Length: 139
Image (tube, rainbow, N blue to C red; front, side, top):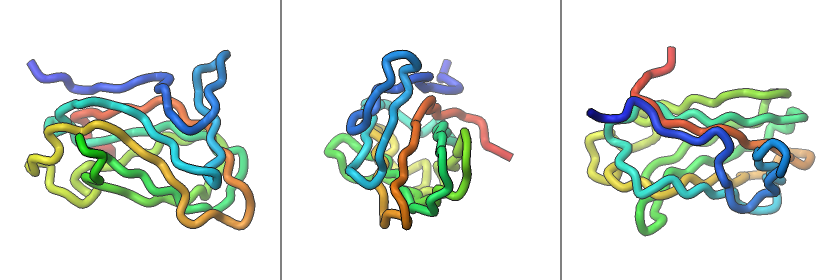
């Protein structure tokens, strides 16, 4: 039987500062990339990627999310603006990230990477929490 979801409540993101009390990762988006090893894992059965991000301030910075394969080559990506204050769970339909889900590249997903492009008018400090891929499709 195939898994209907896979994820982590407090993923060990690299490139930020992990809060020992909460396990969440604090990330200054203007100072470099944030990466998370997630595999190798076959994502072909999944339909949605969700990431929980808290923004203490609306900065309008544009953040790029890359899904990376085994050689750290980009499989798919999305760009979103930090246009909210507070906690938000972002839902990305995998089929809308640039490659059909039948494509063989989804067979071995190795990592996720977040980067800032370009920075907003003020510093963008984010708190990154749970991530999950699921067979569910958001409304």
